[in-house]
Length: 273
Image (cartoon, rainbow, N blue to C red; front, side, top):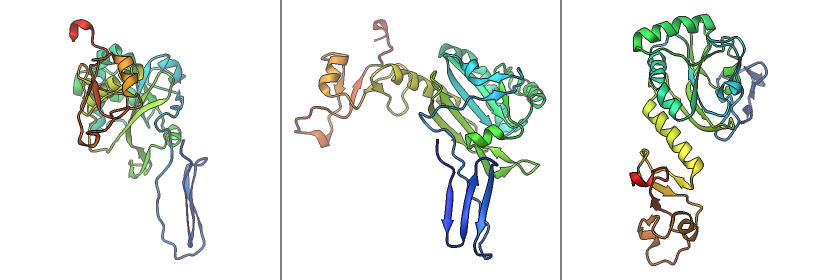
C-alpha cells in the first residue's frame, strides 16, 4: 500500500489525513495559495485487495472474500448510480456472465449509493441493455471504502459536492492479491473484450512459464518466460518446442539465453495444434 502523501515547501505543509479523509494545510505564510493534491494511496499490483464488508442490493451483510471463495474476482468501480456510461458497462458485464463463469471469475460492482438506489438502477440497466444484473453491487454511500481504496476524484463531484469515484477495474487472484488494474475517465466506456483477454492472459501466465505478446488471444503463440535460459526452455518445452527470434543485437554471440523466444499456447490440446 502506498503511504499518504505529504507536500512541504517554505510556505507550509500540506498532507492527506487518511483517518478523516481530509486535505489539511499548516500555513506558515498567509500568501500561500490554496491547492489540491490528489494521491490517496490504495492497493496496487500484488497488494491484497481489501475485504469489502457491508451492504449490496442482495445482502445486508456482504463479505467480498466469502463471496469470491477460491474464484478469481473482478471489481468494477462506478462514479454513481444512473450514470450513462456505467449503465452500458454493467449491462455488458451482465451479458458476459457465461464467459466469466467459464473462467471461474466472480464479478462485483461498486458505487457510492445505497441498496434501494442500486435496485432502481438495475431496472434501468435491464431495459436499456436487455441484460439483468445478478452479481452484487456494493454500497458505499458514505465513501468510506472508496477513501480506503484511494479511488476518489476531487475534480469530479456530484450534485452534493462530494467527490466521485474513478472508474477502476481490479482483477483479483484467488489469493485476493491484485493481479491487474485499469482506470478509465468518466467519458470512456470500458473495453470488456480487453478485460476478458486480460483474465485469459493472467490465468495462462500464472499456470505456465510463459508471457503473452501484444494483442495476444488464446490459441496464438506465446513468449517463453524471460528468466528461463535456453537450456531450461529446452527442458521445459522440448528440443524443438520453441523458436528463437533472430535479432541484430544477438547476432554472432554465444548466449545462454536469447531474450525473445516463441512457443505454442500450452493450453492447446494435441488435436488443436
